[in-house]
Image 1 (cartoon, rainbow, N blue to C red):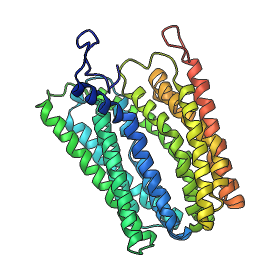
Image 2: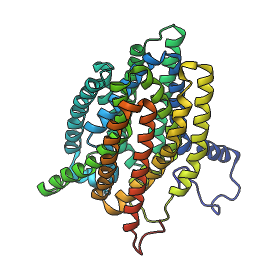
Image 3: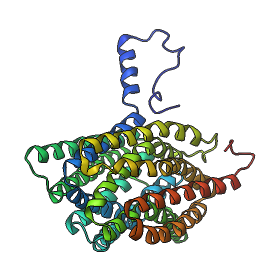
Image 4: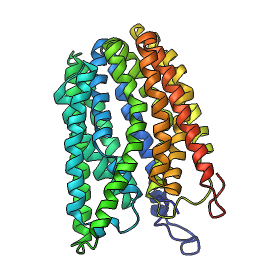
Length: 419
């Protein structure tokens, strides 16, 4: 039963629903979690579109701050969001809040350090924005995973949508004030990350109060050690995935410059629209306690992603016509399109693989992909610039999807659905 219809009575219980009930049902359908997530992603995309008001070099500074923060959070965040989502029922109560908070504190510190190092490597950006945003992102991602474990998809995605709306409003205000400084726009982005982090913390604290006092943890030392081993195995794989997805932008900043980075990051952001459905599906798979039995949803995910990806490329072409400084963005989007579809498939397959074969299997796939991606980035980007970055990225995304699919086939058994 879906979250949207979870509280609806059976047809026999209410054969003639009242107008109020029908209106409530319609409202629930309109604000379904999937629609909220896509809406949130759309607002983030709108913010990316608005940022083309900046000259490419200023947008490059904004992009460098964003990628350093997001990659820093991915590297230092220890993948606690995915780890918490993948734990069996009752895990938090068996470990206790102190253990979860200690893991969160360590991840915040490591994220800040990683973001600072990435800013240094890129040679572009603000340490304040990069480090501060990485900490805010880590808090939001980790704490929101606790809410998602409680099936609060609607609340978490609503917060994402509100944050996106605030970001759009901030960018519009700066544009109307004539402030076309990438540093100022980056500060607005920093403020939005912390707004989101504080909001989701308030949500989870409210949940904790409703639950009441938790039982005394019953975990043994060996179980805590097993947690650390699982975090390490899982994070190694996700670290490799994020390096594959984002490190190319760090190298574009280093070897090509702020202006080309601004154009390339715009194309990447546009194509990420196509992955919205895959992200939602992957989170549902990870939050499910049933072991991800059932048919593989990836074919439907890719079919849904294709028209969105094509629309993103068309949108980039229109933007390039209106803003000649970004006229090459649609070409980059076209080169990235196959990789975007491969990423959508890979997210779904990777979540299924994690549920069926565990952290080690996803780690092996991610490390294989990274072994292809990093040499390709270093070999192609200094020579071919942003076109090379797009080509190398598409190659890496295809490798990840293919390897995930191959590993998932080996996980088939009579107890699993068709893959």
